Image (cartoon, rainbow, N blue to C red; front, side, top):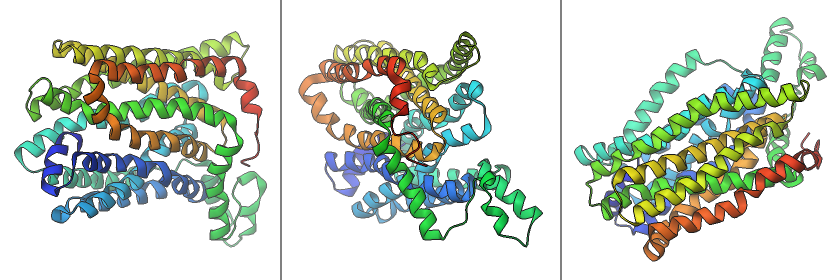
Length: 422
């Protein structure tokens, strides 16, 4: 929602366009490091309390961002609100792993990932209307109010899904006067001091990141894909206002194209991933492997650069808005499919899905922070055609070899360092 109001925020806070862009991206940077703590706490105390607490933390700092129209408070608030919002991102995959079997995971991940991708695509439309007709500060307050309402409802309707915590509660209800039963190996729950337990769980994502080469491979392609997505989101409105002469409200309507791309890829892509997985499982006599997600990943790594070329050159040549939006929709399909396939691959491979997700997403969010910062300079020097082509070529160089490596050597790479995180 903030993307469409960046020029107004820059003017009212008295900061440069580059600083405003950094302020916008700090939200994503907060999501790079907070997941380490969130993943650790979720594996110690369960998904629900950590998710609820993180949502409240986000609502507080997001509401404080525009108070007093203070640039330092805005910068701090954006980073800290991103830290709180990261719970919804890092815990989505683990919760789906808690609830669904591998053969049904594609559809569940598509549904669960729909809102995190759909919100940023559709948010600028609401943001443009609010900043045009009310004031940009209400963008933050409306989000906090809406999130608080959802959190209140979820507190009563959402249940815990993490199996070790559920087993601990069951044992506690059966043996309320005993603590030793909670240390049984079968429960997966071991009582330790808070500091020792937290340090063990905090170190696990770093151990996974440094000891499992497979994480580095999939993190790299995921990072570039997500970085490009945030870059397009941050520069989309300025394209329509600067090059096509549209008003702020008119420019935000083009974000519908991104929302359409996400909707198509989530509703059609999820069942397609499950179909491919089941088909390969049947051909393998019932055996399964994370590499069964690779054919679906290939679709994403092809659509992403195709959409980027289409979008860039249609915009660069000033073609009709519909051609530009079609390219943007194809690009968005590619980013969503790529992210969904990698997320499913992670969940299939790692026992501690939250820690693995935190490790893999760190680089993604760092790229999501950095890419939008150089977007204005990139497009001003190369234009939208060659600027987006350069980004597409970079992704092709990194993205296309990745599925090949995973398909032919994924099993051997996954075996390297396995067990170190335990």
